[in-house]
Image 1 (tube, rainbow, N blue to C red):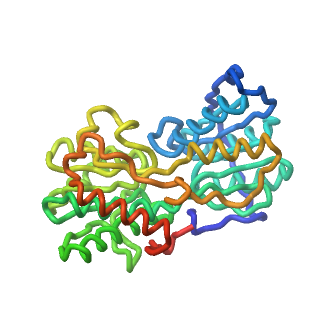
Image 2 (cartoon, rainbow, N blue to C red; image 1 turned 135 degrees about the horizontal axis):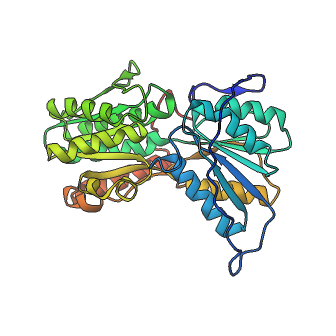
Length: 353
């Protein structure tokens, strides 16, 4: 299941299990914030709430919406596949006006509950579900990954960079497509031959760990890339990406590009010295916007698509590794950003939302 697999009314998922609930109290309405009777329930995927990825960033957005609108938000945390459907069912039955689900794992149960609760608003992050009351929140990460690929090629000392994914799914491969295209653009502009390991855009196949949780798999795969000369690695694999950061720290001379959130801020401090940048999904602002629409009774199911133009995707600051990025390279990346926003450069992928 993925962005490329669209769910429409008629699909049914039957599952039973225990559920885990993590709740946060509603904030007191602060100065200038009108109290609201609106409440929101969020359901995480199996990565949990503090996944250093889009579960975490979605929750941060809902916390910001609490402060801005005085709504009450709670998170139902899924720790495994059997939690998913019951958590969505509980969220839908909570009496709240909005249910937010995160990731492809929750697509079928979101669709199921949306069909059973046609007057309830749903939003699903990083997946497309087609229903009158479901708003997909998706991101054209290839645009920002294009900048990251260009950056990686520009700072590489070995002329070899790499990427890998947790699974061969459009939300993952979209990053990888943009990354290798950015490397190719750098080669064309500079007459270089930087190689990108781990992904073949033409065949849509490459290196995958098969899950988003086993950090050791990410470390082993990254060590293999480093053995082939890679000195910049883009893991698109959730928590598995920590294995790449660990390998980079141990081997030295290797940097990583994180995804979804700013890895410099969300990863443990020990990894900060190897985080070159991150390909960001600004899920936080999307959540605030959607909650505001629900509060204003203006919610619609038109997808929110994050782009460079609307600030939905971006690359993070270079932080401790800014010395690797010359003023000339930084200026080239700024020029590429402007060209993508203007439409002069179109970053294409089979997985483009």
